Length: 383
Image (cartoon, rainbow, N blue to C red; front, side, top):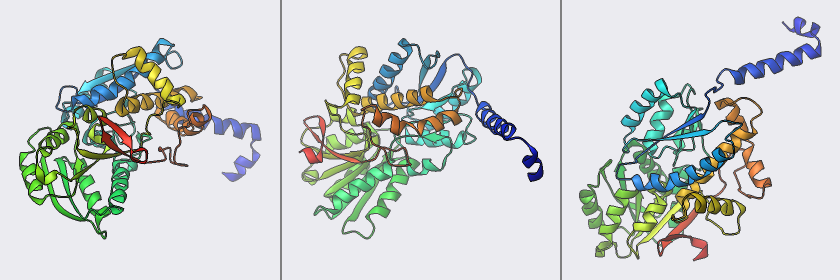
């Protein structure tokens, strides 16, 4: 074999290499007239307010792209499907959808459980999952996956580090009965092991319900000085509303990863609740170029909506995805997109967006801790 290669001209070898690269990217090329991106979200479930805010940022950016000719002449078709917060519904509808409207990718799914089950079902990379609303460490093992977010476990680690610097010694965990949230519980136990902080109570409530009373009573009796809330928006809101009137929670600090639904919670959480959340989506700054673009698009397409973390997250996901598709030198496929997305950190920084990523990881480089004050999340260092 090596003797044969030695006899070939350098030009022929170069052609052979380039042809191999072309065929590698050609094999999963997406040829539809429009770029179909499918989201599964609780559009009519108890956590519909998360999807409502998140999708405003997504739709605003995609609409602007489509009005300006799309991606290399192809329009983006963002299809949001109601899964009512149930992963079994999402998987059934995904299979039905692939028969009729072949999607390029699943994009911006809300529930972490739905995201994980889609990754498992699509592990052959035929349909990647891009930019889910929140992610878990266990997602990283899948090859058909891409996000810029640090995972929820990283957010929990930042919250634990905050507690370690405090005098709080007794904590509790309230979570939604979902194997992804249970994964977070196990991670929390590990993080708190060998610290001065003791877990005094762990209690849960049934998934996709507001039946928090039993868990609430169990936790209230233990009166923890800090409580981790591992659930989506509505269950968390139900618990916090009850805690507002309970003397056992008078001096409790509530802690939550960003999957809780920051915008919806900020609007509706009771006043004077000490709630701290962690996110790798950076706080909005009026003088940032990327914030100016986001604000301009939101004013254009959703003039009556307030700006917030979830809609900004949606806008940022949509923007980075489109940038990745635009800079690809080849026809659209998951392989070509994945290679292009790895270049985005350098492009975004050099375009004065100044978005910072972890070197060689394509994840946003920092976890921010924010406290809810006057219906807005404020960075702790700015208090």
